[in-house]
Structure formats: structure tokens, C-alpha cells
Amino acid sequence: MPGGCGPTTLLVDCDSQANATAAIGFQKDPARRTLYNLLILNEPFERIAQKSQVEGLDVIPADKNLAGAAVELVSSEGREYKLQAVLNTLREKISLYCAGLSARAGSADFERSCGC
Image (cartoon, rainbow, N blue to C red; front, top):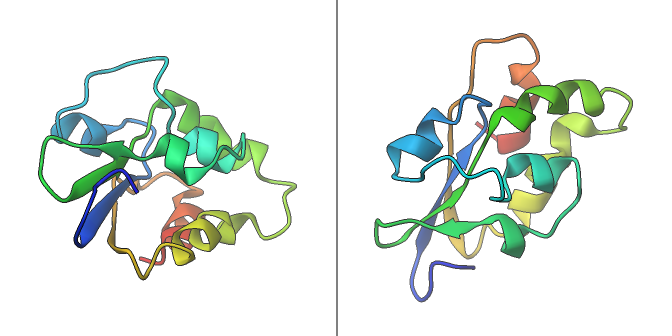
């Protein structure tokens, strides 16, 4: 976990507009790994989580690519639980916080995945 010692809060930005990512101080960076990389490209959590400027707060950032995730996951079995499975492995190390859940159709899958 990038946050170091002690309890860490994880901000998971589940919205392709990435407002939570920007609000915590991250500039747009096309090279940054995001929630899309975790869900679609199956990259490991440790490569996605970013340490923020706020002590004890790590971020799984979002970007515009997340908008296509719902379409790309449509044929995946258990797609609505994919993120939850990753986050469940971290529950003893961090407090979870889901943010940026948009009102668009399909966002309910991400909401269920985050456990919100």
C-alpha cells in the first residue's frame, strides 16, 4: 500500500469525469494508471494506487477511459463485483471510501462493486 504505516483511507474515484481525482490535487496525466487499468487491464492494485498530498490518503484515480469500462465489461461474468473483490483483499489495511459515482446508467454496477 503506497500510504506507508498506520491506517490509510483509500479514495476510489469511480467517475470518468475524475472530479474526485482532480479535487485531491492530481493533474490530468494520460500516462497515469487508473481504475480503468485495474478493472479492464487487470493491472495489480499496487501499480494503480497513488499516494496523495494528504497524509494517510491514497487514491485510485479515474480518467475518461473509465466511461467505456461498463461497455467493455458487459460480457464479463461477475462484472459488478470485480472491484469489490480487489478491495476486499485490502479491508484489514485500509478504510474504504468510494467517490465520484455518476448518475449515468450503469454506474450502479460500480456502486455495488465499491460496496457503497
